[in-house]
Amino acid sequence: MPRIEPITVIANPWHALDAEGRPAASVQILGTDTVIGGTPNLEKSRAEGLHLYDFDAAPVVLKPETPREAAFYLRAIRDGALIAADPPTAARAGVAYRNPQKALEDAEARAVEAYVDQTGHPPEELLGADSNPPTVPYAAPPSDALATRSPTSETYVDRTTTPSPTSGFQPPPPSDNARSPE
Picture 1 (cartoon, one colour):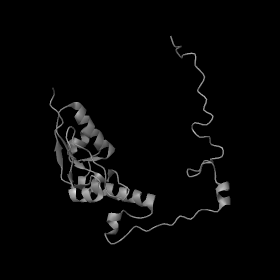
Picture 2 (cartoon, helix red, strand yellow):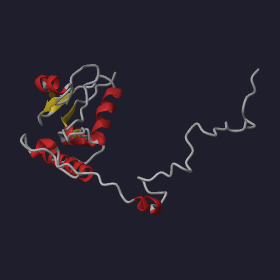
Picture 3 (spheres, one colour):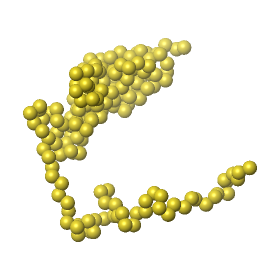
Picture 4 (cartoon, one colour):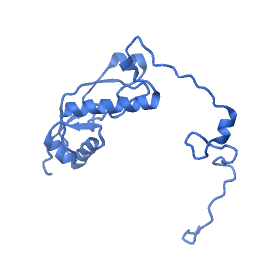
């Protein structure tokens, strides 16, 4: 078997956030329970009933044993869940090399910005322990406002004309290519 070069990466937990805005992306070392760059935080995990990790930005050298393993890690770099920690790893993954610390900071900024866009407030951990995210009260629009909405609006579904998945179901007609039961 040909020798497979090591892959040096930094975990990017900011690739995904959980509902509270905590970094939640992780990549496991294949064949193990070890999360790349993450250390289980047992105290927080028990308190919240979740699997929570503390991440650090130290480079991790992965030594894939098969081309398939190498492809898995290189794909995670291309997808953004891992950051290439050196130029040779970036070249193998087909991405431009960037300073890993700067790439991690940029990933955090993008994730927080996306979270704020979706929720209207920053992640709870950025607000501090004594603060709660603002509550946005829901105000129902006037009933005539619903009638004037476009049926293509992503938040509007006209339930009076949209059949349920099972009402009026008709199987497709048999095609000429369908095999008959023998």
